[in-house]
Length: 408
Ligand code: DSN
Image 1 (cartoon, helix red, strand yellow):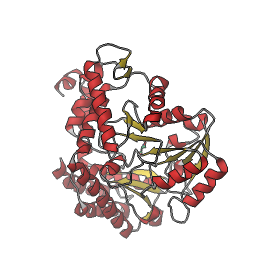
Image 2 (image 1 turned 135 degrees about the vertical axis):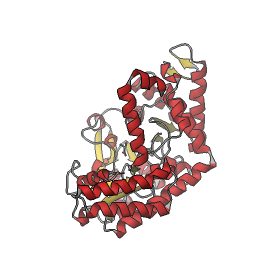
Image 3 (image 1 turned 90 degrees about the horizontal axis):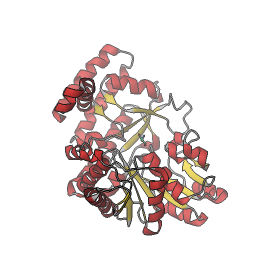
Image 4 (image 1 turned 120 degrees about the horizontal axis):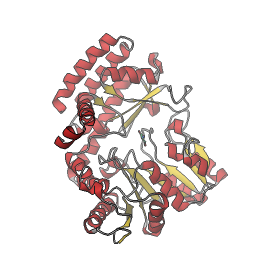
């Protein structure tokens, strides 16, 4: 980054520090990852200089000869990887991509049935503070209070009573496999569209670790930067019948020019995900999450649903006499990065919830395995035994940095 170093020393220095942070702390936020250098090269390329409103072969600007080829590569790789007949790779990120799906399929005021934010839904699944909550009528659902699992009998009852036009399956804090076929059966019964938000699990789906929504869902949305390990962006996938509606909802419905540098980086990430190593990666992500979950349970955390079969763990820290934010802040002081999170039926507020959310996509990319999960649990225990002891937390941070030194 010699030009940046010369032209803007402040930003250069901050990026250097952030890079150092990313490789000296244990990054356990389940929606984060490390992209390859190839993805970053595409993302930081001259493609950022181009405008290309429209789609390949039908653009509003000239000079698209290479851009069209790049977008077609990204699109066809997505279609091959997810076994779908149409992919739109232009959405800027997950929130506008979800909105584009709703705009393509619904009219403002229509009913959307989505998981509540506090039980693991996303803002764009109907939270009142989101534009979605203002534009559509929201029928919320949650998980079983007893098991923390999706309760399909209850979901069916709600759907029959409320007759939503669209049902959303897919979450930001649900640690178990989602049965898209069961969702489809309910959607079919009430004449609703099924929208699958696979932002968190798309990397697990393509590596065969989670069932795919592709035969069941009408629309599928994924971000590209989580377990899929690409640049920050999103994609929408659907059958050919809905392709035109989806494309129009993205452009010109919600967006102007696509970010061509991101499109190219998505294409690179998809090529990586098509390779056989990615299957091994997905398998190890889940193994690591399960090993971590087991260890966390042993040190007294109460896990939502009692464990995980994905990349993600949702843990109630109150049995240890802690609260989520306090736990997350103490962990950060020791170089372990998680996020405070509500647990289903949380008695505390979303800003000061009872739980923490952890995941293994990033640390698995670095090459960590079950053995390292044991080390991480030991660090976490040390932190939780000394949350108010800054001197001790500093000492744990030193040990964490030594542990991370071999993953640079
Ligand atoms: N903000 C993302 C997450 O952390 O899960 C969801 O979009």
